[in-house]
Length: 258
Ligand SMILES: N[C@@H](CCC(=O)N[C@@H](CS)C(=O)NCC(=O)O)C(=O)O
Image (tube, rainbow, N blue to C red; front, side, top):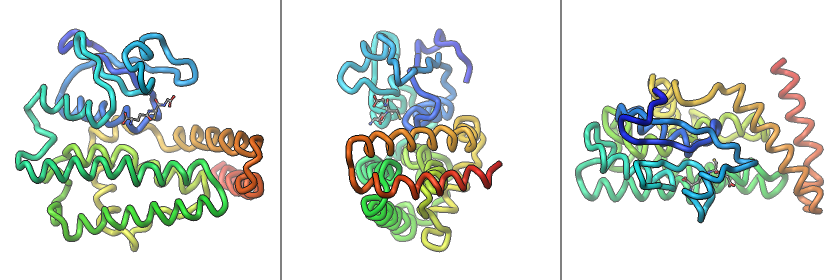
């Protein structure tokens, strides 16, 4: 996307590996909106980020003229309501409600369980893997039986808001599988979800936004090692016992990649 914020007065504060940032980048791209992108160092947040998102202090933040808008799903809705061409939300109020419900579910349930898989080991991780499966089963059920049944995307023939929210994050499933040495997705378990994800990832606008998997793997590997060593230093017995195993597994993965 062009780095010229003049046209729409749009600036986006983001982080290159952040799926929440990718959501906003994708929505802006699908709407054909130009914006200025500002990469944040999340280990040393800028005073501008803290000024514009003083409560959560997170990316993404969208600036539109004098307004700062925070929280990715709220930003997506703001974009859709402000630039109404290529609508991301369905026109039917009930379908809009369903889209909003599943967006909430993705962050509240699926994202939370996935986060636990990433930062834990042993029994806690096993339980979190089970939760990810349960949540993916619900998404699969929705594709099989729900109002979205038979559609190419949740948005119909084109990517909609729910596709953006679920899709910008689902590529982490395969990254976490490698880094945390777990099995999260399987085309036999979740055939409709897997074919939806493949189609989503093949869209040219999506390809331009998702970083290279190798880069994500390297980044996620480093973050996981740091998280495990911090919890082991804090004396978490579950993580301490299993850190060695996990480290060995991921070292093996690294070895096989070389
Ligand atoms: N619910 C937020 C989540 C945003 C979020 O977690 N952003 C992360 C990057 S992926 C962040 O800024 N982390 C910095 C921190 O937690 O200090 C949204 O949807 O925008």
